[in-house]
Length: 99
Image (cartoon, rainbow, N blue to C red; front, side):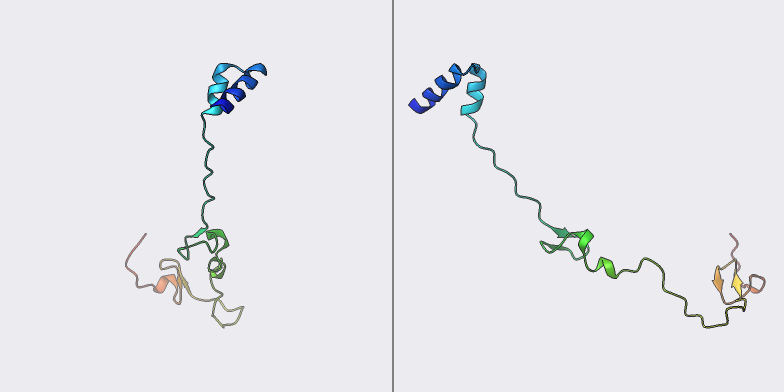
């Protein structure tokens, strides 16, 4: 208590107000929170890497796979506007649905 009283007297001599004295000596040091753990939503694991850095994410292709059609370039392929697929012409489509 004597040490506390001496510190209070020293700060009072330095021009601090009584309210500042109360705030400085009764506070306990604040505990810092630990940083958040790394977590990957894709692998569903902690502490290895973040979702943005997941090695599995790099394996997913950004574009659809290339076509496997091996016909000639100049030949026109039959395409159906109704079904939106290659293989037959719109006129010969047997799909009864209309959009």
